[in-house]
Length: 168
Image (cartoon, rainbow, N blue to C red):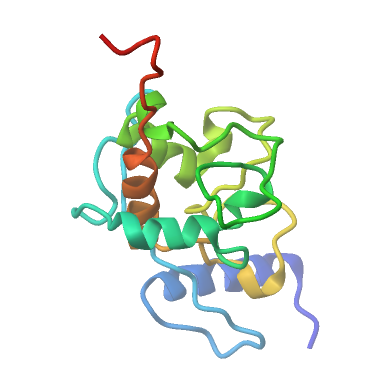
């Protein structure tokens, strides 16, 4: 069955609204759209947790080094001696907690292009306005809200240690 442009747009709009309500139209293929936790951006940060809770740094570290989930080490390096082939096209994650607040880290994970349109870092917690998204991933964030909080907790724990010259 071929749909006209306006009918197709109306069905897609209706499907989006129903998917957000947890329902799905009986159209093939049908993917459930994720419901993202609301958040507010204040300057260059998202000051409040997406979940209302602190993240777990150990789970966050596991996501950062996971080459299937976070993919962070494709571009970043950091204090991960056991990980070979770390990236060098983005800032090192070493000392990230000294350079950025939790809110700043959170915004960089949620939607880095908001801060820098030309960045190659993906939006890990955004589903609208994205380009070249594989059909299996449309309507789904890369990381869930709790996973974002776990990565924020881990990155915030990465503090630069003073060098011998800086020590009192």
